[in-house]
Length: 136
Image 1 (tube, rainbow, N blue to C red):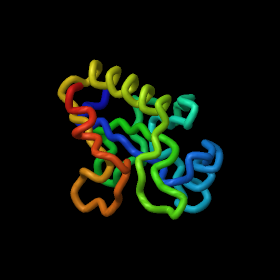
Image 2: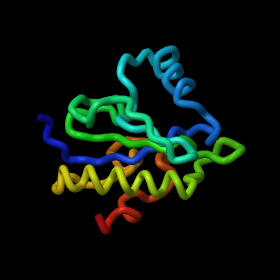
Image 3: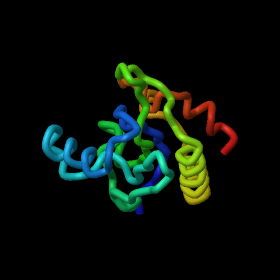
């Protein structure tokens, strides 16, 4: 059993219309990854896709995956490619549901955004996850 210290929120930094298949292809073809970047991926509709079992590390944050769980919503940029919180109400609901369940299973884990790790030069998840989920 992995000891989970961080629950990490991500965005895909893609248009909200991006698909799970397109994101997986990008990771395989462009990044050369054999393992997905997130444990759960959430579409604009709120539909969740399990990409990696919680028992296994994903490729969420380099150097921090052994002790983290990662969830992402599809979106996170505006029409010009700039960071923007594009979460739909359905994505917000599912993020909260998943983080509550993970927090219950790992009460000492802290909820952070990808951008909150040292040396990360990304806006991901395009909102302040620590502040938004501080009540959990």
